[in-house]
Image 1 (cartoon, rainbow, N blue to C red):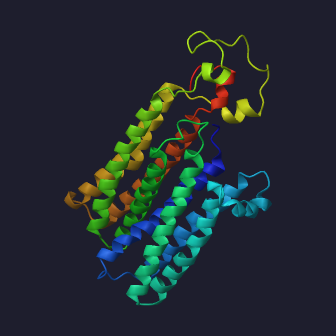
Image 2 (image 1 turned 90 degrees about the vertical axis):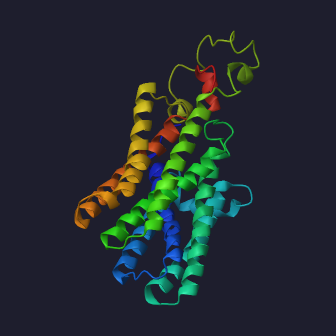
Image 3 (image 1 turned 90 degrees about the horizontal axis):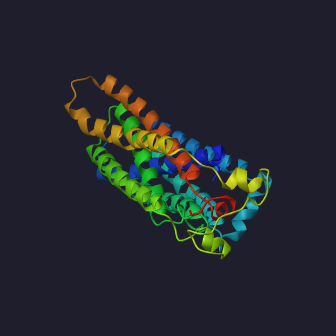
Length: 315
């Protein structure tokens, strides 16, 4: 599939914003930590900005963005519609959480809305992933790993950013750092399993598409047409294997390995907190760049079944 900039921005940024909220669940185990109101406002602003900008960017992908609201009515059958409904409902407990967290000291109600917000955040990211994993025409998307990795990527990246902000304000939550290391390595392992699973040829091939001959003997004399059209430009895109491997390796180093290694090692480093926090900011930016690479690969490496009519013998 052709990678679309607005969709890539939407899935990465909104997922990161939701991940920041989910990572705040670690506060349930560190209730004694005194968090400054300025820090709370920064987290609230950043998470809202990432979520809202991502959702708004997703509407730009539509042919008629002004009609986006109509998609909400199809929630019974459409994962896209369910995602929109879930995203809207998420703002209710999320807004209430920030109001109680920033302006009051009522911990029980605050944590209740935090748990509710986190649940809806996970639900929204799950719905986003199901938009793709429900498409049987693209085997690399119609994969059980896709929803799991989408959710874990959201939590990993959001946790890295939350940890960085906390550290900058001299708040060190060891539980959060342990979560980042564990989830990063777990997600890396699952991502490798996902890449291995999609490397195998699917059951769809030129024979099943045409019903003629066999997989090894059927060949196209020529393509359906001589020029490019919507299908060839939007549904059929290829990437060099060497470039794909390089981008995969870069993503893994940027998003999983570097943050996990540094966060695991920083207590043993002989450096002042300013240098560590500055480095963490750089690592967070690198991790975000890595996630953009991952989402680009998610689209460019996918093969649509329609490509079987344009020269591909299998997908």
